[in-house]
Length: 408
Image 1 (cartoon, one colour):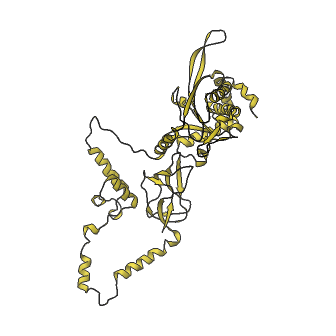
Image 2 (cartoon, rainbow, N blue to C red):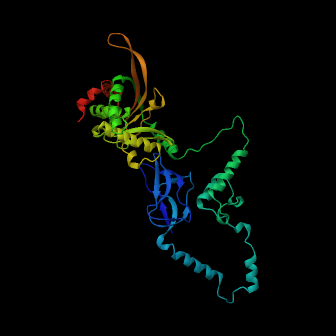
């Protein structure tokens, strides 16, 4: 018998939620076959079989949290799959037909003993370890459950049916509440945020006139559409952000608390906060400083769809040097984002509003105004650092043609 232990599947991840078993106990598996889907604090990950064989036990129920390096499931390797049952059958045969000797029972006693049922306490309800664990959590005695599986085996569905019945029979009142256990992505995010709030934050807000940027976007969008690509404003935000970070590298840094060091990055990897059905996921757009707008557009589209499907790969979630959140896509105007260590800055973009503003002649005109709120780590940055950086970024957004001077 072999045990498959949950491998280390990401930076700092110590546990994950078992979302869905793709095999059952007794199923044959082959090497690299998907066995189970688990949810980390960042994405849904498929775990595959290390070799061919047959599953003998699943150690976690769906919805449970599994620790890294703990046994996820047990299996019998293919080389042992046929030899062991024969040995077991031989052992059973020997036990059933002992040699007759001075200590053997008379035939009458043997047959009488065989016909007597085992005491109830000695009978064990058939169920997998994962089902037994779930029963303990629910406070359900397996001996009182009528199993719907083969030979009366208790399945997870049997326990869930009991739980649903108990919920329906509960007396409801005005003070009743629905309790939901935090698990998977949201539980991991909660732990990460508890650590993040220990960072000494300060915030800096600004209004940016993006009238010219919107006009440029419309002109470029037609070319992108002709090539079958969707050019969003986020590509323009990121490209201009990379240019501003090149001028203000202290904002594109990381702070290592254990060594009290500031690491200045020579590249620009921008984390892009995406609202997914399972929670906030932050895939990373890499090397924005050297990517074309069309390349950025393609990568943003790929990562956004993968995040919403919950299938972002581990490599796409690591190494961000700064994060940008477009809260305006959901209608928000202002937000105060929380920094994700070891990064030292995060920005939250608000929705674009058409508002009255005075032009150079004092006349009231309609302008497209976008808000942004930056959070900075006060151990590395101060207000002046953030203000100068944000003004450089604002300059590129308000006069987008000025980016041409810096594009390679």
